[in-house]
Image 1 (tube, rainbow, N blue to C red):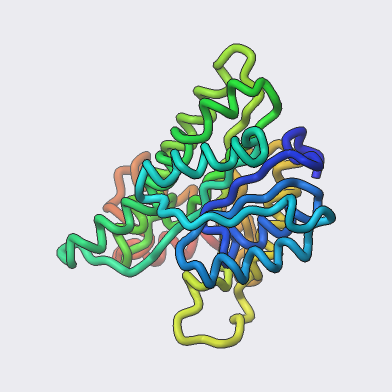
Image 2 (tube, one colour; image 1 turned 120 degrees about the vertical axis):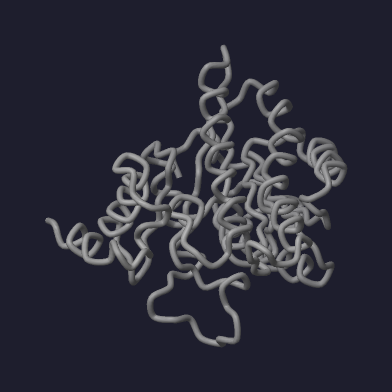
Length: 283
């Protein structure tokens, strides 16, 4: 880890840190000697995750804190920020990672839309607003990682609430990065994590074993850390089925719908199937 914020005894806060990508990131931060704070729901899940992080940390219990908090509530994240400042003096790394995917439909239950927006979008906004003023004021190198999704870029049919929320996370993180880099004296950088197919609680479904095409959370976090070292803003992760070259073509085609004035989501439109296949076949 060469990002200047990822130093021993710096403090990392990870929401959605009790499982999946969040837990994998928390473990890597702990192994590197950072103080680690995880926030999630469920006392038993949090306690089990904290035990693993303590075991991975060179300084054990003194470097780890687990707090039950809902990212959907701004007051929970304000309380979390205060607790982190009281325990460790402030925050250097913020990973707004908590997410849900209950499924949605255009005319489906509005409650699903509200839940997805509350966690996947407002969780990122609440987290950034709660932590960033203090991180900036510290005058130290800082790092914000917001977990997005390829579904927020290519917006495939099937789960519109999730797509809309993740598309908004992309736009929000781009605006945040611009704001931070134009702020005099600010040493905090923002980055968008765009996972591929990762086998987590969110994607597991009824499966007990990882599909061959999926990456593990650990593979995803290792890739994220390598790309942070390289200075990437868009951390576009491949997986075992989809290489970066294919992601790039899918993203380019999605942008081309506007430029070429094609039908919305033409990649899935039967009249454009041959054109899309030909586009993919181009070297």
